Length: 423
Image (cartoon, rainbow, N blue to C red; front, side):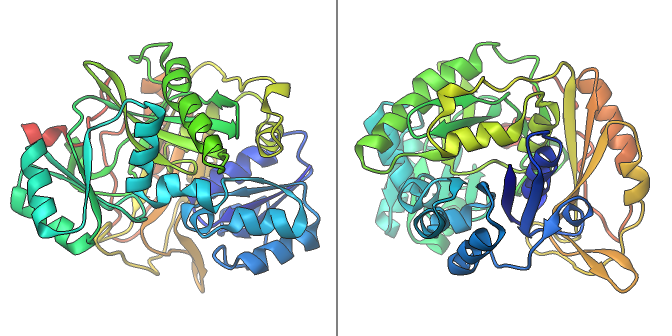
């Protein structure tokens, strides 16, 4: 099978690496990719937001499967264009289905129609509506930009003025009740009608230790979750994913691809915080590290509506932890062009992969390209062992004013992002 992965970051690096290790996959192409991916796959300098150019590349390469990594091209309709112009199987939802992430308001509407357990919410566009919703739900206040915001459009705060200011800055927002409980990421592989869950993971969103500071795209993750109910994945498929697939089918927008279910495990059971229309990053990274069955066949079956004809994904024993190394100033801003050292040494550590997210090649070698720069992913006997390996390897990497959290997977329940608001 010849595959093409669309995207530039850590998620795409992890996906391409898993595909390259699948014995059924003969070629891995990535557009545009990054320097780390270029070490094992063929890169193509094509803009993921240029659907016409991507479709032309798909036809040129005569690939069997296209895997679209980031959300923006999916919301832009890239899957529809590729399918219509080439007939090649695409793992990723079409434009209409991708609105589950493209619009928080649409997502809430679908959840309500499907009977999915989630937070009470209001969609607001005026100051009067913002104020009424903030008063209705009370503190902690949760305000979400209705549009795509790269994982950083959410404010959770006890400060009503801060919440109101965020709403005013965004315009159209969803204001909802705060869900109290550990957060979990569950990825469902969907073919429009059926779904298989991957192993749950936990993501650490805030920039500083202890779940403090602003939200980021994710500063680390781990899997499995020894403290979670073993039946959690099956429960989420039954109570969340299957009703959502049925509702999307009724709307004429069948959902094909990865449905990311962000959950809060509340005292009343799992409730959905958000849907995303793609794999989360970095939370998919440890999950893929533990995947013991082939990724290519699984994604191709989903893309062709034949998921139930292949075996459910299998996972190896042990655990995996990912630690993100971010540039100075992230997430408000970020520096670029800082020389990176030690990546080769870290990659040489047993059971460690250094995943590139924001890197480039400069005149003197590998340099930062802003944002989250690298992720160090390790596999171990258990979470503690994987964590120790990840941090030991991360210690070998250096660049100017690097940021990283020291508490990824440190506690059995992880860090409840947002819980520090209640201290």
